[in-house]
Length: 466
Image (cartoon, rainbow, N blue to C red):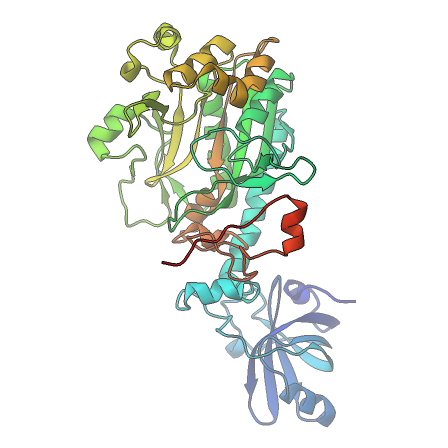
């Protein structure tokens, strides 16, 4: 029965069966060494010339061929120990070999870190790129982060709830990805930019503590470190104040780092707090890098940014929200919000958390009274009809008794990137897209059959060439 490569150190002088990929082949004439790789590590295989048939089969092996072997685990001589590998003190003398799958020569080396390879080539052959040790580690650590978050929040009486992917198109700051309805021609679903409205409706529903590791979709303009689809930790809590949300998230981040990344050093706890105004004046950004030593790759400088302005001017002279239309103002500004007065001075309950110069999360206490939520949209210039059309479901729900509530969303891709000292979020996403939203591996987006368009009552109009 097959065992993991990492476990050969417990099978010394015993017989084992291993399966995996050929990583490196070294032919020394009368002896062939193969580095065999599986999901847990690397084992050195030894083929001796005494078994002619087996030796001839081994001589055919090439990188990335998939094989199964049976053999004897032996301890390597002290001078031959590879101290860079957990299994480097052992090797397997092969007694049987089965070639499960041959492989073409890969378009790039798998054993390197991949940074020297053109990124578009890596993304085209992502299933090969993911075989390299660095990305295997990133994916496995990301899984551990997700599990840690889930366990922590469940212990805090949070309920994990999945919210719909097909929803209603409402203005939340970016373009929606639209999905045409086949059974209701001319109408569309929208993919969620965030679960914002659903999680607030869960507070209306009395769930009180919700979380989700959620997929989100935003049709934004090209930017190198953006993805059309991304992942966020999303949570919401009822009957709380700003301090409750911030303290819980701070504890979660501290415990996550100290448990899963003990080699990292958190510069300061509790996390320092800085107002938006002071951050802009002192650092010129609302996501300040507060590290005292920017040359230390393992130094983590978390900070909270608070007291954001609620509204900002649009290009056409109107008002729009700076973060979230569902946020509540600070209590002392509620009257101004309700009557639409002193709009530039209104501060929101928004709180962002920054890490080493990057925003990794943001949230707020929400407007839980329908008249306050409606006032936000009126300041933004929405007509009564538009408010009813886009947000009537929220206002109706809020008329049935809503607890005070608030929450936060982490940019999970960005946090994982920073914890791994990777240069961009594509290095921690299994199947990323290019900066302009293309999936080079699957060749998407792509055309569809004419019959599919007819089923959806759609017609493609091509632009005339000039």
